Length: 454
Image 1 (cartoon, rainbow, N blue to C red):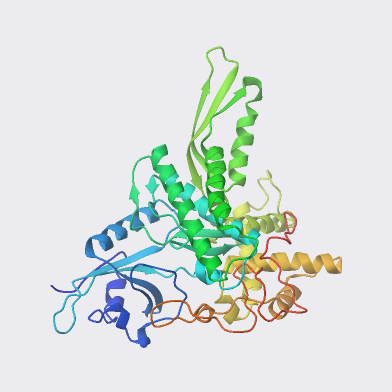
Image 2 (image 1 turned 90 degrees about the vertical axis):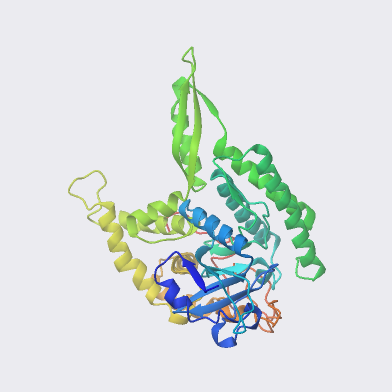
């Protein structure tokens, strides 16, 4: 059988042809591989570079590869956080004609880490809770879109920093299925699988000495069920209000917006006697602040990052002389937002050395600068300005190492000891291996949150 590459982008097939498809993935030469931390997988997985991009390559059966490729494309169309499918390669064979397993190729998610790499340093209980909160939000978003995961776990998830929290991305859709709407039984099955898997994964970390001593794996595994239930109830419950207090509907919508969701479709009914109004959000879309920031500025960010940037944008706009809401002669928000990107956002980010910019997403950098400016301004009892903030942030705040240095990869694909020195947690609140006296980590632990509008 001839080699066949099925890809989403017309540029990828030519680029991917340079990779050694006639060699088993486990034996790929180092010249094609990129040393990035990988989670546990029942398949052989490698990170490879081709055409200036980094891809995750997974050997799997042909039927499973094609099916997962299709599911990931469906999730991408639904705007659910998941890895980006790139291609499926079939018809692989050695120079002797021996068949090799097909592969599924996805794009490496910049700034993301598997949970085991994050636990290389002991994470505090509050940080683990934020990790599980992110996974609960992901599971709710999947279920709202009719996706039954079938194998929800920390191992099948990648995590990225999102301001003071995390964003979770589905990385393995092998067992999933998409339906118009999930039954309660299907959702509860996913929750039970998540509870058992997470408790087991935390028990494994505990056995390896990588879990904070105050964390009990069983209650933490059960916590995701509670967090999921609270969020699902808020997003889907029916509310009944007195007719004279219909403004409660607006208050409910704003509360959903605060959670990061838009009400795309709603159902409102009046009782036969006309005394009450029933409100039911029928379609709820995640990414309220993401869409608002993208519309105004063209910047693509995680939800909490977008909320932080919007606060700064609104404060800056209010300080502009030509900003006059409701005045037809005043500058429109879109015009001011473009000016903010040009005169405020970009200069601040570009002042950060390039090697630091490669370690995290641009919106995360700006969010951390905002928090650090707030901290320095509180100390100085005046606004220190962004130029001084950038200089101090670069010099005095520990930053995560480059992705390739986070955790060396052994020949069997397992994570090796990251070595000695300062071990910086992805959210900045890990316990240091060697101490960071005189340096303060801000903007990551969630404990130093500036007031709105900073």
